[in-house]
Image (cartoon, rainbow over all chains, first blue to last red; front, top):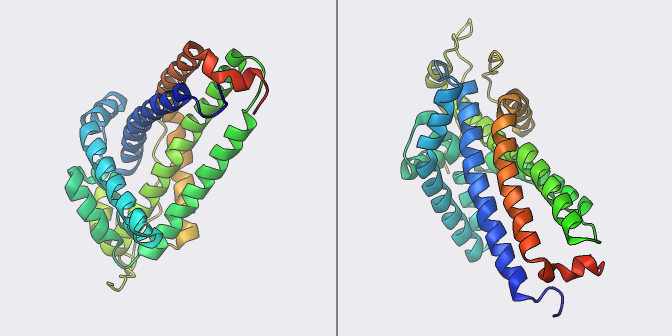
Length: 213
Length: 66
């Protein structure tokens, strides 16, 4: 059987991709709940947080699927439309978790928040993506060993665990930081209410409202 | 859960946003460990079982072709 063209390997790759997708969905729900707890005043305790993560799972799935479809459609059209859409939808998941919006409403809200700040939003998002991608590549290359299949599987699993545990929260943290920045610029008063933070003396910082495209 | 540190509420540039992301990441990682490790353990264990169940497809590993 020639290497790399075997049908079983393709099936295994699909099965692994499905398993990874389920992990990323569940993991993202948990990370978003933790970040929500960290950001939002009057947040739930640990048990309430996990319950919230499970309750938001269907909305997270739909928002991820819709955003993925729109970004893929834009990327297929040409790369630039895909990047434009990706910037517009970059904060949909934090909106979903922190504002409790539904999937479609989260996408619309993200689009509106990023208006006029798409380039900066894209730069921050890509910065996080490159950091995650570089580390993932490094770990993946560092865990390629030949010899016994069992050792190969074990080392690859360790590398996979490191990627999943350490790197999954990075993308969500970047999206949440971008979300906070966009809201700070557009709706500083509302953000202070959400955070339960007192307004600074001398008033709130003036929002550098971006011009609409 | 450690006490929440106040979040800096100032509009910031791209580097500042990434810095804020690092603060959020570091602050949230500790309560995440248990849940993420449990989830990752399950998914990676499934991956190992899948690999071991299809060992013949991984002949390239045995033959050192990676």
